[in-house]
Amino acid sequence: MTLNPTDQLILEVADFEVPVLTGIYSEETKLPQPLRITIRAELVMQDHYDPDTPLSASKNYMDLKHAASTALPEGVHFTLIEGVADHIIDTLFLQDKRVKAVEVKIVKLAIAEADEAIGITMTRRR
Ligand SMILES: Nc1nc2c(c(=O)[nH]1)N=C([C@H](O)[C@@H](O)CO)CN2
Image (tube, rainbow, N blue to C red; front, side, top):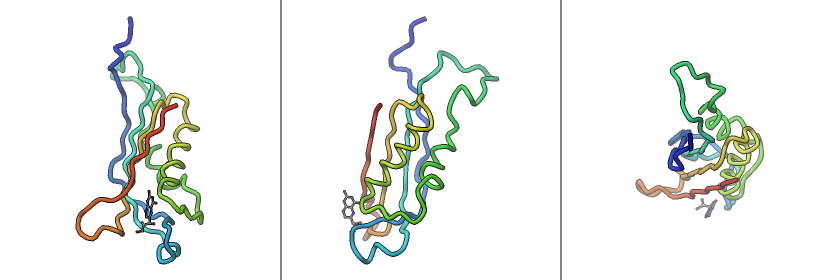
């Protein structure tokens, strides 16, 4: 059987809020500030998933949440949120060779004046 090239498995954690030590300016460099993080990871996909297919045939989507929280180094200040995104992507690539690509969107909540969402989206592919 040849695989359909359009088949795709994306694991996702959306709008996860986490406090991170980040920022360029002196008023930002003392305390962690809240970031809203969305992670999408594309995984090598099986031909088929049966009702009893085990988790080992995929990747636990909770790993994405851990990559954006407990896996971030404690006490490290990220000048740019790009550094936060890169750390999350590195964590997921190192964990599992089946991760083909990762997209990380970060919104810096503390700088919004109204309801605008300011931040970045970084994507890396192996
Ligand atoms: N591309 C980026 N631009 C900016 C960042 C950043 O992390 N990446 N950070 C800042 C300041 O820390 C900002 O949040 C304070 O207004 C500005 N631009």
